[in-house]
Length: 289
Ligand code: SF4
Image (cartoon, rainbow, N blue to C red; front, side, top):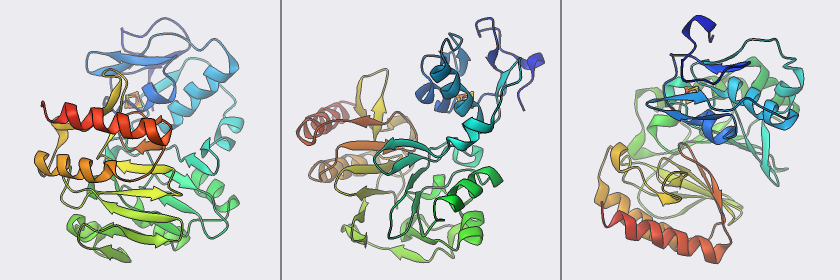
């Protein structure tokens, strides 16, 4: 839990603050950019929330923070905030909140659908989130993009009985009992409306998931950079092979999607045609680094 004694000097005065335990995962910065930004190798409060909406975003970031590094001086009624998680992104696609330190604060997403709900990557398991997911019909599938973002997958499986899907090349000891293991580099249909698209490179078994030909859940393969103002890949956090990341990016560009919803980095949305242009910009940039 954040403590005032550890409050960073870089915060502006006021109610919200970040303390020195911040691990710089960037979650609060994309969730509530009007409140949080980066200073050195940590986040800080650069502007106190000045509306109910910005205060709610900051409080959701407080709950999402994987290391509980965000605090407030005053007490807030968290009831409505808890009820607003998972938080709607678009149509039936939600941000799960509750990021886990074991996946360095990677984002997880929730799709609510009549045929059975889906979690993409694992959030931190909390009673509050489990209750909210129960109210929305439980979890039928848990889709794991790669070995770094599996967090509390076993707890979600034990609680909801969800079937887990992962690429064989990223199976480790903790994921050896995953129900569906996919091999190779061909696109694989998981459900009628959702497919797994192997994108090796960040790790050998990294995959993306494409839902409804509209949403790309990209794990750590690709994301939007708010500083570069373009789609990019993690050159400095490439654990398998950069040339393979480039090949995967070129194959991925041929797919249709409008949203990129990443594990790390910022989400983004473009029209299908513009997305192809933005993906090519990324490929061109990758050739230079
Ligand atoms: S969410 Fe928490 S750990 Fe991540 S950057 Fe913000 S304060 Fe730091």
